[in-house]
Length: 445
Ligand code: ATP
Ligand code: MG
Image (cartoon, rainbow, N blue to C red; front, side):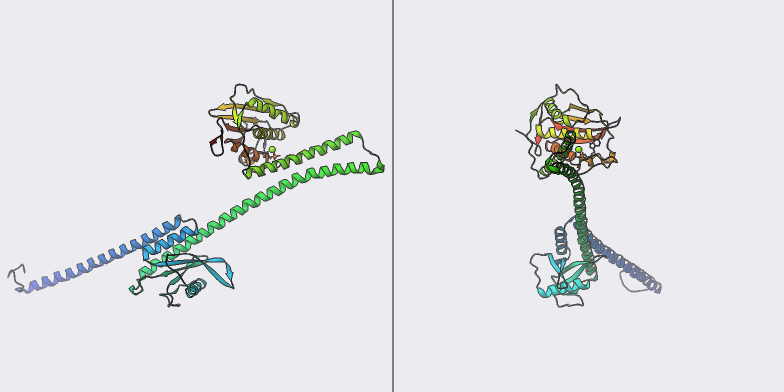
C-alpha cells in the first residue's frame, strides 16, 4: 500500500510478495507468542487468587482455638470463595449400633439436611471418599459430602450445596475446594490435639497433687496416731494388772509428754489442712487494721517461745516504723510458720534473726536463719502445696506451712519470697503494702 504504485494493493514486483510473506509469518509468530503470554498471565492470576483464598482460609483457621471458631471460619469462607452453602459434621466419641455417629457442628443458615442426606454423609465418612452430588457415588443427593481426612484418620464430613449446578465446575475450582477441605480437616485435628494435651496436663497435675496429698497426709496422720495409741495401750496395761496402777511416776510423765507432743502435731496438721482448704475456697477474710510491728512481734514471740527449742530469736529494733494495715492474727500465723521453719531447718541452738524495714510504699519483714539453705531450683516451689525439699535427714512436716503463708500474704496484696543468704542459710521475706489493698486492690475502709 505504501510502495509504488502507492495507495493501491497491486503488486508490481514479485520480490514484494516475498517480503509480504516474510512479514506475515513474523506477525503470526509474534501474535501467537503474545497470546501465550497473555494466557500464562491469566493462569498466574487465577493461581494467585486461589493461593490467596487458601491463605485467607488458613489464616482464619489458625486464629481459631476451638471447634466453634474453626467451624465459623470454614462456613464463612465457603460462602465467600465458592458461594456454596455448607454443613459440617464431626464424628462423635460414641458409636451407635456399630455405626459411627456424626454430630452436626454447624451449617450455613437456612441449610438443613434430612435422613437420606445424612446416610450419604455417613457413607462418605465411613469410606473416606467423597459422595453425593457431582461424584460417582449416590450422585442423586442434594449435597456433595467430602471426608475431612488427615494423615491420621477421618474426623468428619463437610457437605456443600452448589447454588448453580448447571454452571459446571472447572478442575481448578475442584482442586481449590479439595485444598479448602484439607485445611479444614487439619484445623479440626489441631483443635482436637490441643484439647487432648490440655486434658492430659490437668490430669497430670491433679494426679501429682493427689499423690502428694496422700503420701504427706497419710504419713503425718498415722505417725502421731500410732504414738498416741501406743501410749494409751501402755497406760491401759499398767492399770489392768491387778487393779493397782503399776508405773513409775517419771515413766508416766514421759508417756504423757510424748502423747501430748504427738497430739499437738496432729492438731497442727489438721489446722494446716483446714487453713489451706479455707484459702483455696476463697473463704479467708482479712480484717486489716493498722498495727504496730513491735506489738505484732511481741505477740508472735509469746506464741512461739515454747517451740523455740533453745534457739535464740533476735529481733532487730522496730521502734519508729510506721503502723501497717494488716490482719493481726493471720500475719502472726505467717511469722510463726516462718520461725517454725527457721528453727526446724537449722542446727540446734542456731540463732534466728527477724528484721523489718520500710521500702517506698511497702514494708518488708524478713526471717533469716543459718541453716542448710534451699536449692536454687526449689526457691519458688517451696511455696507450693505439699512441696518439700527432699533431704536426707527426716524433719516432720506436711509442706503446707509456706503455701498457707503465701495465701495469707497475697490476700493482703503483698508477696513472699525466699532466698539463700550469702554466708549460708535462708532468708524469707514478706512484703506488705503500707496502704491496705485487699480484694483485688480495693482499699479497705
Ligand atoms: P509444715 O506444713 O509443717 O510447715 P514444712 O515445714 O515441711 O511442713 P513448708 O513450711 O511449706 O513445709 O516448707 C516447705 C519446704 O521448704 C520444707 O520442707 C523445707 O524443705 C523448705 N524450707 C522452708 N523453710 C526453710 C528454711 N528456713 N531453711 C531450709 N529449708 C526450708
Ligand atoms: Mg513449715
